Length: 169
Image (tube, rainbow, N blue to C red; front, top):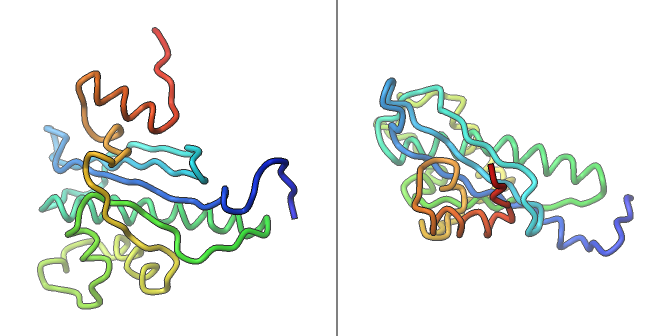
């Protein structure tokens, strides 16, 4: 067991916030996924990546973003288990109720059958109880910073909530 001075196990609760724009790239209409991963209240990882598929709806783009982030949070869960910190369901916060519904619906509807099977990875882990998706209002979706432009006030608000600094050029 690793002893970290001043840290308690409740400080090691990972959580992930993720977001997506829909068809944000004007050239190929692919969406951008953004994610920020926390360990307790500390930001430990963030990403902004163009999705490798074209999504037919906002819900689909959000679902793909959630699926891509699921593996990252499961990796962190495994790493923490190696240090003796085990946890059940890792929370993933999402501002799309439709995407959350897709992950929890055991029936595969015909309108979702075109989604590549690799993105259903998250459904499997929701069913196993490894991750759980929670709704967060868009105003509190910190991963927005990695998917779309904002005015200066919103930009600095998100930076401060993430614990990031804006360094002068």
